[in-house]
Image (cartoon, rainbow, N blue to C red; front, side, top):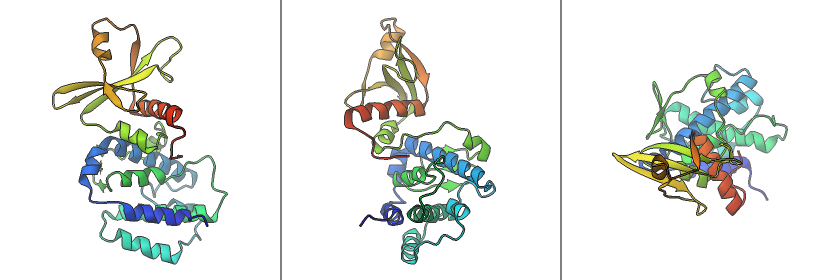
Length: 259
């Protein structure tokens, strides 16, 4: 018998180490991207169901099906798993993710044009715990602006949620990404990507290789000296993630997470 979506989400929540500050710091970049993607998805659902006042940390399933009930045994187990967590909105999102999974178990007519709202948030929790909400969203390693429904609904989607891709985005220091472009290799399909990391005054230039890892490169230094004919353009983290996942998929097959 296939395990229910609700039971899977419950097991994921129970396995999270909410106090793992080291993981939160190690995964600061990917956690920020995942939180921004959750805020975007939640904004889309809030607009679709007239729930803008409830955004961002709210029970979307309640707006889709007000009569939905979480199985009592699962509801009791999740309350036990969430005991002692803060803030209140964090526990609310965990219950909401469970109720969303319950909705998926009971209905197959959910809007196909709207993405799974809670998967990015669950992945963020699994990569270092929760958050604190004050003037900014504090992810225990990075702080981001909350914004509003409209500003979040219009941001660039972050759809590359496979663990290997997320891991490749996490590194120490201030990072700038570049795509190597030339004729036949535009920005959205470059020859390769490189990044420059500046950490504690040291500069590290690295290329993402077919070994599916970042390795030292002299490309940027040689380019500055006029020894490289291949040009490059600055790109965003999301564009870098898209390239990383495309290379990983070509070499290893389809990613394990479907947004």
